Image 1 (tube, rainbow, N blue to C red):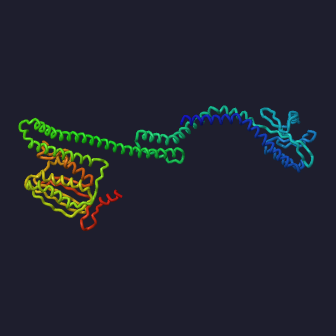
Image 2 (image 1 turned 180 degrees about the horizontal axis):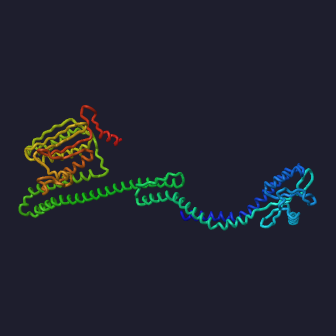
Length: 492
């Protein structure tokens, strides 16, 4: 910018200077001729009604004003009037005049040029009338030596060029600084944007093209920043989804491996017993005894398969539970009645503290979940322990708590207790525990119904808590909840 601007300024300044040097003489001559002709025309009009004697002051004034020598001649070419200012040129009689006339012969009224000493003269002759008498007006104009002035200008050229160069450099420097400062600032911002740094914006606030470019750059920065933020958010979500998918895939592989192990052992046992019975080997000749054992093993396998199928159904993305308004009090009493033989055999003290509470749930699934929790409380409690089941509705939230005394769980294992096939008893003996899928199924069912759940150690036992988002007491209002209303909308 600096080099181009300074170069252009030097070129244009030199061009203008040379144009003045070359065109000034001809322009000056043309200007002098035109102005003198205009003054003569005005003089002719002014003295047309005057006598020669009365017009002499006007002629004298014309000579002084235009700095010319004026002579009036009669029809025979004799001088009849010469202004006082001309007398110094009329030396040696009429020599200069006659010479001037001789030189002017054959010339048109536009005047002619000749030199006297070092001056360039221009003679113009025009007819002039005084009260009807016709005379000749001769005007002799001395032109200044303009060529000499042009030569002086040419001699002054080196100094002019130095001045032009200094002013061009200084002007170009200032102009380039002012012009390129916002461009350099925008380039800095654009470089940061290229490195995905949107912390700085353009501060150019002019109303010209550079200001518009600055605003466009700021808008682009905002759009890029917003797009990058959205892409970053989407990328993080994608990473989370990939990580979740990997974890899910790992759980699936672990799930399949564990199921294979859980099925392989009983299948091997049943096949061994059946083979021994077929060949009548040793004690296996008593087929009735080992058939009952094989049947018991197959029953356990059937229960395991049913649990796996239930989990598979719950984990389907398009699975929708069949919701209905269920009386939790009656549901719990029904579950406890089914388990009566087991808790009476262990002489467990079963205590029910139930209120009338109804919620909108899938009845079969919720019966399975609550049944698993109560069954675990009975199974893992020692003989003569206490199991307390409480159903309340406080602050509009139905809550079920199942407490069993005499047991506790290590705090580190509480975090893993809802994992598939997790058992506190590591030997995985079916005589001391189940398959490890019970609480996993409970977790899936409760999450499907948006029920909060928690298991924690108490002072003398373990407490499992389930809490719904809303409840309706029987007898106070229709058996509808917020969840039931959502179900009705979905059905519509």
